[in-house]
Amino acid sequence: SDACAKLLEKIETEASAITHKGSAARLKLFSSKFGSRPLSSLSPDDLLSWRAGLIKAKYAPNSINPALVLVRRVLVLAYETGMVEVPV
Image (cartoon, rainbow, N blue to C red):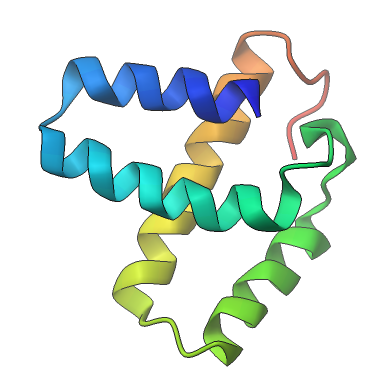
């Protein structure tokens, strides 16, 4: 999504290359599930289901939790920049 791309641009200017690479990989998990949907269509239940799917797929908590933090940052950025009218 545009919000994911904007967040990655922001991270690229503010963080190390390693952080940027990790963030890109984590956001790819999100985009692979929801990339075709507008952010405004997502519900908290969608995100909880995605998290449960990551757990079921045996992703480690130290992979899942940072991914959730980044998704939250994407959603906040989308709200703050007017991409979505209501925060998820």
